[in-house]
Image (cartoon, one colour):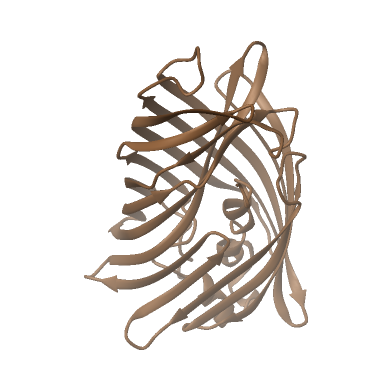
Length: 323
């Protein structure tokens, strides 16, 4: 179900937009710096967002046995995150990523017998990231190593690691392309290695194709003086820890959000975002923290539902400052 680790996109992509800050202006060609100079940066330095979904039906199994069909009557999620630069040198960057998530939902019947219909969970993760920039076959290469911990409001739970290597193949005002690979140091990861591919192309009619695999496929267009609309599909995930009978369980689900996104540059490095469309959750699982994702005890499949997301970000490092 979870084909990408929760840390992949924010951590694997985190150093990319910061090359322009980690190196002097004359240390990177203009065409490469153009890759990262964007009024709407891929990552947001400080971000908070709220998600609400419409009610939806789901079917589930517990220990391989079918449970009665159920319904989520309400679902809300609050996310807050920060990417903080600690040390910036000519060829390397040290940073930290902080994330907090609050999930609340109410079901028609208890999801698992003898549990509550109303549920709320807290999840947090913290990571330290090291990025090194060099040349490979006369192309800009980015190497990263990340160590992270996560947990709930009760305990720290897991320690994870990730390494990536990527190369900027092309970086012009019209076309940008990057390829790479990510490896995960995490016994619960479904796949140990995952490719990274980003591609951006601006067409003459003002539309832009934005691909970041396995995260998203979007077409974008600037509208009004400071707005941008995007149409397409993004992948996201939700996870948190649960406690029952002195055991720790982890819940994970993959979300496929298809629809429209509107972003507006509010000035002073603030960006407002509205997202809406259809959310599909092919599968969600609960498994013992000491086991792997494949050794689950509970599995659910959701019907598609309407979702709405509103957010605001503050990006003091979003664009290089003129000197």
